[in-house]
Length: 168
Image 1 (spheres, helix red, strand yellow):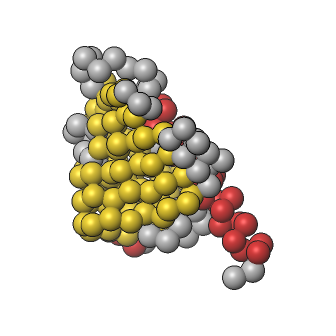
Image 2 (cartoon, rainbow, N blue to C red):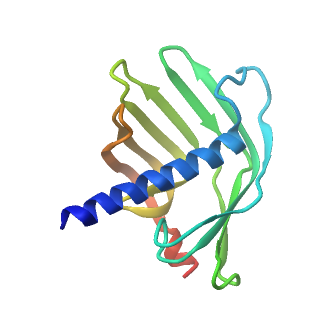
């Protein structure tokens, strides 16, 4: 693969991660939510993610439900999503839409060197350069180094459903 293609894919991956982080911050609130508080409601205005990333066509993404971040000792956290749904729409053909229940949990641990390991359990909406834009059902993990570079792609056990194929 040419260096320009690899660089382009990495840039698109980082842009998607940034967009998803922004959406997550809008829906999940501050990571400093007290553990004893209840989950808070989520109802986002749809955002458009342009082609070719994460799908080869423009998509719209909106979240509804609830979420909660629980801070744990030793630079760990758990993000839960009770009753959360993601509605993903093919912008060019709005009849091609899917609403996915994404009530899984994200378990994150930050190491002293800044490496972040994320383990997802249950039903989660994820993107990985190898797996694509997927609904992951099961137990999966991925790892980023301190610079934000993916060093362990999505791996685990369960089912991966191609979201782009579902709304093509």
